[in-house]
Image 1: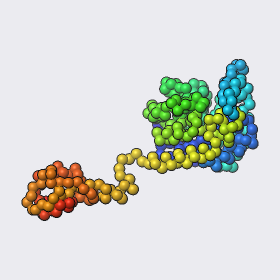
Image 2: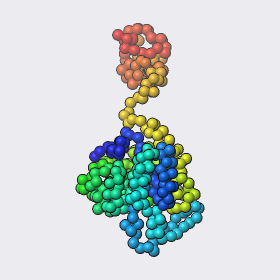
Image 3: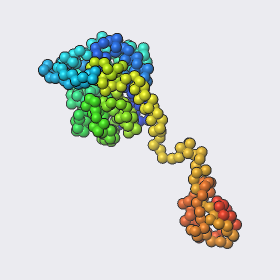
Image 4: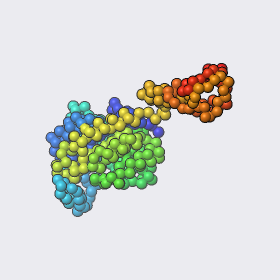
Length: 350
């Protein structure tokens, strides 16, 4: 399996900077002007990409009586799912405009489709990566359609069993897909802290061998930071200009101030993660001799003295024989005088 995926000019995966996505989703509220300001704000906050959703409501809702309950502007709202999603649909023309605006702002555009037509729209537009939502993980024909584009694809795994993820990954491979990222996700809005289960990241990585990431639906940034520490190469976080705006996702989204802090903290964690090779760091090398211990004489000794364990002390600096040499020193006969506290060296026994 590949340890990295190429998205535009970016390498995403192990050893590379975390790819940070501002999920605009439906938080644009159907307002193109608002969406463009959100793109600008996400770019200014340090996001690598913004994500939209180019769904068609009819693709996944036929019963117009299905209700959806959510919190908006501090109040509980219950309304038909069909009506809510329909308000936020994007046309192909809007996608073109949003991608162009992303390019002007120096940020990557991508989106989540819900049909093969939607996949083709994104491929024709030149989107550098495709994203499949958790609700569509079981839609294997759509995943195969994504695979056939040859574009890097991101599969979100909310609500899934490991067997269902395996089905999706197999479908992607069998359709000729290559570059793939798997996102751990808890499909609960917002997600309570005790339902995050970040350790699933290591399970996904071990089970499938692809780069892994995290789609964060919690309030705050702690879960995303923990995910990066556990190896997530992709972080996706809902983004809003104002949590007080009307709509189902604003209340648990990050505003520009919080998102900027998230980006800053992720970059700081990356700097701390460093290398997995276990050896002294450059910084440690400077003080290693000063701070480590050597075998030193516990008191004054004359030539001919045979050392026993009680004759050896361990003191700084670490420029002489290390403490593990005590077993060799025990029983050795001194050929040179040694003063108390002097660091033992092979020359004393030659």
